Amino acid sequence: MSESTGGGLAKDAMERIQEQLARQLAKVEADQQRKANMICTTFLQNKKRADDCDAKVAAQQQRLAEYRKAQRDMYAQKAADAAKAADRRAATVAAVMRKREEHQDALEEEMTTKLNNARKKRSFHYSTENMGAKTEASNQKREKAFQDACAKEETMLNRMEQRRIFVEEKLAQNREEQRLYLENRRMEEEAKRQRKQLEVWQQKQDWIVDKLQFHKDNTQKIEDTRKRGNEAMKERSKSTGSIRNQWTAKWETNRNRILSQANSRHEELLEKQEAQRRFVEDELGPAGLLKRRNANSGGLPSEYNFEEMHPVRWAEIGQERAAHIQSINDKLVESDMKKEARDAAQREVFRMRQEASKDLLAYKTRADAVFLRIKAEPDERKIRSAMEGLGFKMPSLPKKDGEGEEG
Image (cartoon, rainbow, N blue to C red):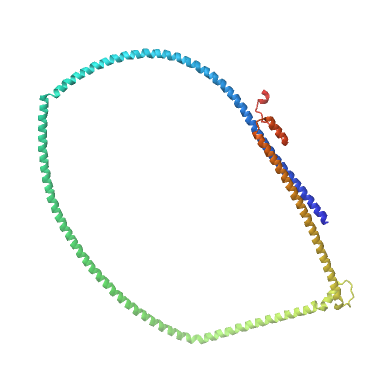
């Protein structure tokens, strides 16, 4: 049974492994198919872009040729227009130059007139009579300014002397006021210090009086407290005897109650122990064992006693123990066989997984090498043959709307 069970487990494991490997292989093939489609699609897209670019370049060159021809025609027309415009500008310049010469002649005549007038004014301005009159007026103006400056200086000196006298008087007055202020302040500080000393002396005297009075009051209070305490102790000592007798009576009552409860508990415990002892002697002793053996023997004669049944019971116990040991050995052997079958199945599974991993790795390596060649290959036919060698189909770009009808 164990071998069949182990074989079934190994078969199930092998089937699961094969399914798992098949899923892995399908996953890898799908991944490689996706990579191949992506690479080929990129190649086709790049090729289509290159073809589109070539067509666009040819169309652009055609447009450039047409544009250059249109430019040449335009430049020829502009050159003709420019020649006509140059003739018009030359005529305009000639007219402007004539007007400019006339204007320059008018300006030259005006400048000559201004220059003659300036010469007349300069000869009058620098003449001897005019310069003498200006010098005399300047001397009179200078003398008047000197007289005004002397008067201002004398006025300023008088004002400075008056201000000096006023400042000296104010300084003397200020010094006297400051001296009187300091003297008054010194006298006030001296009086304040004397008052402070008197206040401190008075406070110290008051503190001494209060301290002596406080000591006297506390001493009197302590004496009164001691007297009251002695009187209270005397009053308490009178009632102490009756209180002690009451407590003693109460203690004896509680003690007798506790002893009676303890004795009742002890008696109950002794009765319980005696009942247990009788049960052990009657039920668990030889007589009780023989009674239960006869009740469970299923028809043994009642004259069998304990000495006769004891070896029989020990033989039955030995047989039961041997059967139990044999069942344990069988279970151990079955467990070992199952373990060996599982180990063999696990080794086979490991080998299959290893082989599958090698195959998958080789397949991926071969596919990656082909993909590298495809990426560097510009020929579509070689790329298609390489894809067919891997077992893949060459993808195609999706057609836009209208391409199929045009083709």
